[in-house]
Image (cartoon, rainbow, N blue to C red; front, side):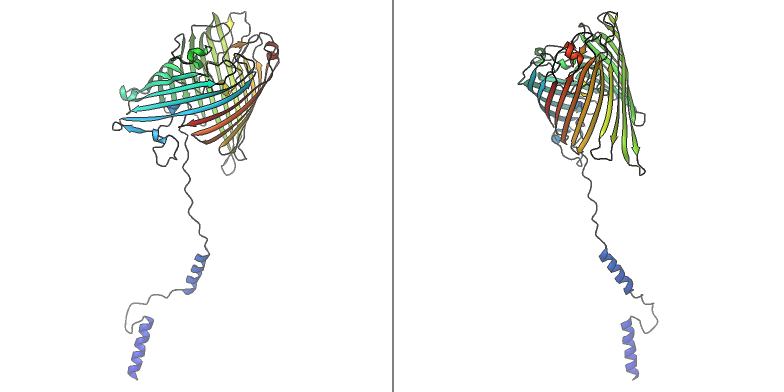
Length: 509
């Protein structure tokens, strides 16, 4: 009996994990109720997958001036692929030389009627083709060499060709940049050669991308950028027809373009970006044209001006941007001499826009006013006709391209909208008047048309534009315009309503 009791006691102690003699305390038992509750809660939890990484943002490496393109695009493996990436940042000579190449193909069929153009009125249907090809060679940190070729041609033309339509197998840009800080321990960059130029909103200096040929100059330029300041100082001669003005088209058809030394264009253009959501341009431009033409704004002209651009965001209680106001103002004064008369001229323009960010299509509604002075008295000893110099008039005075900004009043309303991510639309209405009835109407090339004292109203224009951008490589745009002529045109230049249709395709690489 004692032996059986001792054996039972020992087995019981082993079964419970407790020794018969002195030992460390037993570990606590698992709380089965808590365990089951946690298990059930785990089973009821919905599985939430981790968020997918955002797709890489597509950055547009193509700039209005191709020599400003982002040549480093595609060197980062996170950059989404674009056509032509393999042509960028090709390292040569132990990385001492870096070569990039690219270009553009553009095709635009046109159908226009009764425009204020040479050879009109009438109907002209024609096709415009343009090919641009550039090469950019960086030489360590010493500088670079840049060259860009263009072939611009037209066919199927019913009316006479325009000089801005044709320029066969030509050099558009060819210059060398020298980094002065590396070579001479002086801040800035020195540029010499043939080059396009673009400043501000392109109201006075633009490469004129709408034309088939683009506008270029040849000469010297100093570029400086430090902190909030940018500064350009240049001295050039215009080269092709888009820069030289009213010239015969055969001069630029199959002949190598030469600088026009009878015209000299120089200036200082500075930009300050130290204001919040704003920037200011200050400039002085000088045009000397020794081949002065009667009733054409040329001569020896100094243009001093200011451009100011600002935006202001409106937010809701949560800090989300709901609306955006934008304001753009520019004005300039011209002085000098033209055909032995003193120049006293100027221009002023203002654009006020408002964008709704939280509504469908994100519409922007804007209003524009433009005044470019005209001559007040043809018999006095001064001229008041403003010279627009080298503008992108297509963007401001109607896409039908009837008018220049000389002796012009323009009242305009515009609606921009985006019905889908890759689609953009524009509808614009213009009311045009002469600034002075003692001066002529000037067409887009700056040629005077009509007679004096024939009324003030030029007419009204409606522009409709739609653009589809698949990616930075490919885009298509279509536009249609109507121009209903007013009393001045009916009296001095009898015309029926003008219309224009175009379909434009861009491929960049």
